Image (cartoon, rainbow, N blue to C red):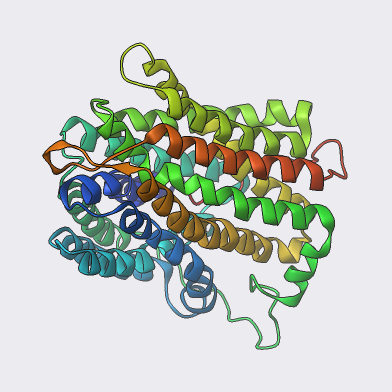
Length: 412
């Protein structure tokens, strides 16, 4: 069994190494080298949101019912390697967007598939999965350190590195244990669907509805961070920006350890609120941070990632797991994923690009510069508004959680 866990850790490492290698620096390459607008950068970053929207359908209705998981993973990563390579060769927005979109459509389902394969191969997933999944975060960190230290953030090389790693992942998946699809559900049984009647009915309650709406809305300002932080740090002159941004994933690991302690003292409502407040503070720090004397503010914004992500998304997954009936947990988690990583991030990609363009100003040598203080304050205001609405609308029925197991997350 220890050998199996080592193989699953390697799978997770490669899975998130691929994503971390190209996605963080995409905005810098598109804006600084290809001279794309903020709106175009936002749309390109939002392709993963489109992929997240179709993932539940692909995984639930095709992969889990018809094909062995390891073969599906190998096929998707091999195709993804080709698509990323072709994307790295393009110079016009239409072609770049088309290839990146197609890549996201084949990559995003692999996040759920790697989780599914791991769960199937572990004897006690609740106890064992956390230490398997953490290697995905390590893969993201290593990718960022490599890209940052090679000083290739404004080039197409990160996409090419990711394409090569994706090809390695495709070959590796063929060595994983045979994980055949589970028995097909009866035609009349829609309980596994994220959009079943029973799953939708759960959101009629005020608190669950408030949580779902807040989850969607908070992901709109979140896309400012994911799409534009690397470009921001490079434009203001921060050296080795991609490597520094891995501090966010390192703090994410610490945040996971802090969750049980805060659960006992704050409960779900105020942990979720603290996660949203951290996004407000992060954006304010970015708004006024600068290399030099105010570099501590930039580091603060980066290192808040553990609170920003863990205290909202991971705690939110625990809340859903607690509130949903056993038979509906997977379906409701799928719906929250659709609302957050799907629709929320998609709307955020449009809004963030529009705001970045609105605060663009001409600069020398053909480089597009932006009024970043204003951009980050807009993001902070959006996150703050969601926080206030959530505090007013959400009420926690129980003072403490009865269990705090760590569900599988989708973001590094």
